[in-house]
Image (cartoon, rainbow, N blue to C red; front, side, top):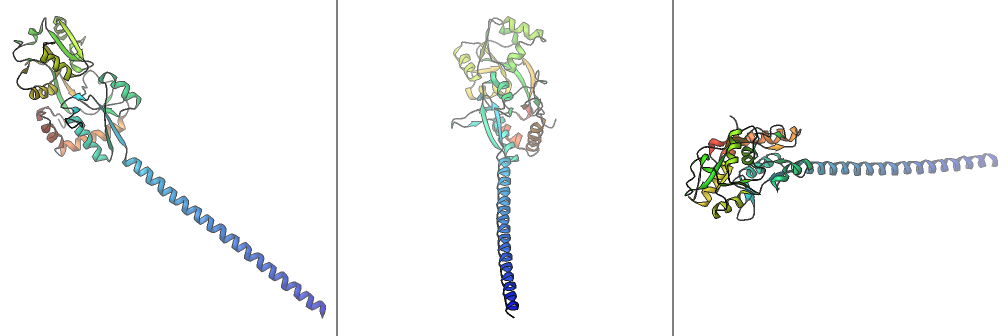
Length: 296
């Protein structure tokens, strides 16, 4: 009888211990599951945060435009110290369409290729002539028809290109006007340049106009859009010669092979044209509507 009772006690104790052991295992299992759930929740939250950061990064993509800060009406600093201009205003509108942050980056025109190849800027958008550079960049469609002209003082007595013989003529460094004057395939222009007493190169056209006003130079080779702006802003003291030096078109220049960015910007620019924004912006900066060549 005692043996039976002893055996019963042993079995009860074993059952009790087994029950405690299972309880502990279940508790440990529940704790692990809780930790896994917490880890999963944390991982999911981290994924959401990363996605939000990625989304925010996309929304905050910067579009950096390289431009000559002294090239009105396409890009310049206004009286309030803000960078404005026909090209810069269009670039801002493109950024608004794509949710990008617009950055206007003034550059030395001589260093524009280095700025572009280094990634410091995303494009050159500043009255940038395509002609003669067709293979050097990935270009947007042309958006402005432009010509190179000569500006002279109204009382200079200079009425034609032939009258420039023996005169001191100014031009901007690395400009389309300089390229036209030194084009080895255009003998007429080479002969014209050879007839000058001197050809003075300037870093910017504002300085060149100051020298024209002071009489340090007697004529200035310049883009017609810039010439029109400068003449209007300076009064009736200057005129353009009737015969242009050359004709050309403006485009947006991207790093060679960057078709993806070019396609996005170009599509947005065409939308702005269809919405009438391009014409309205041109009018605000005194650019004749006939110069706009989008959609033609």
